[in-house]
Length: 52
Image (cartoon, rainbow, N blue to C red; front, side):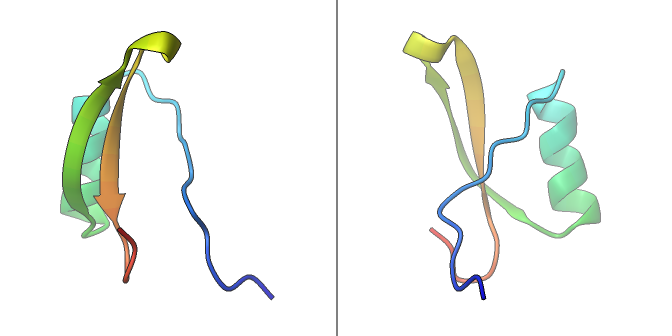
């Protein structure tokens, strides 16, 4: 039985549209965004349950 998941990555074309979907429709809070230079990606952190 799975007790905890550290993180899940989902590749999307528009992080802004995806963040809006996850927050407005699924009720998740966007906790922050950052650019990961070495991977050339922008990531968003969304909170679910007692995750950090």
